[in-house]
Image 1 (tube, rainbow, N blue to C red):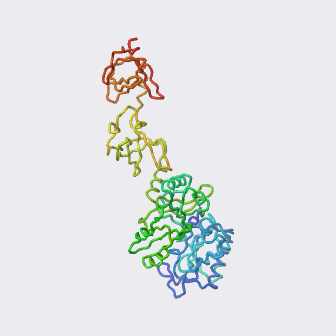
Image 2: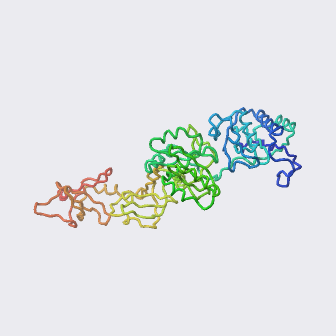
Image 3: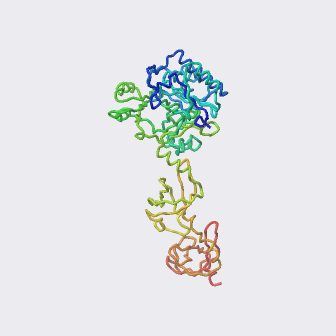
Length: 496
């Protein structure tokens, strides 16, 4: 349960309600920035009173943001985003899910009131939440009515108004999207990607607009994994270009980009700039061993795949979502499939090596030749054609290699039990294949009829007789092995 379902929500503000326009925005002459003094102190005392009334002594940081769009821009930026001294581990300690005592929570509220560039939601799940909005508007949610806190807040000279919900309650970008977790399948796929590409870059976003970059190799992937910030968003990118000039040539004429470069000592640096700052950054690339340029506009440059770190118990509690890549969409689709599931798709192509590819809703699955039919075939085109709609059974869902093998024959009646009932019958059929240890004879009068083996010892031929493909032989069906799908025939026993 989160703050969006808490029953008591209050707007706390220094502004007189009479000074709001028809949209509820402040329209008076008061300064909308923090006074860094008694009014700011009153806000903090009000939050402390609501927390005490709610029985809360610690808060969780949710969806932290640093700088950029997290900064309202009303006051000059401050080094450290107002977090100095609050987290022993530095800014990386300001991560989703981090629990802080009320005292630290109040300092975070102060930083947000001062518009220092750090922003987050502060919540105690199911009990309490505090959000800082534009123009010094504060929103407090609680599971209790907090009458004492309301009285205290008004005595401090602040105004309160009860609301149905905080306008800063978390809302997912896409409620229907299933976020990919950085689970065992993710790390197995990443390991395979690193091995195939020799090196890959991992972007670790521990707060919105704040990332660290790691160049992964087969030797360091586990070390990097152990040092990632909890609940971080992860994005896997192709390796940087060792030809720095080529990387620089990818800079657009204008626009917002992130430039990443690796120094000779292995240190990785990144910065977000626009065309007015390109020259300043390019001067820093003189000694770089590798570099890359990523557009900051949605949909222009996408990583190979993304994920969000789950908690240590494997549960994904982070609420933010990464921008899905085609690979992520494949993963999300595969999560809907189960072994044994019946699916319908369209044949898109037949490979020269015999595999049939089938589109099953935007994902390409495959059918190997043995799974096309219970009966012997020479080529997939004997059974299917491009553009044909087929119904098949899912044999497996490989989340690591992202492969889905299908079986067409699994949804067909198995004719082998009927063949087994013919054991002891004598039939005449053509020789289809000659091998060193005998000949194969078709025992059904159809092109895709089943064939059985007449071993050399069971041939009733004199030394001068020569058997050729197409010759008709009369044979007795001696055995039908339903496990190995083999039919044993005898020419010698045919007359008995």
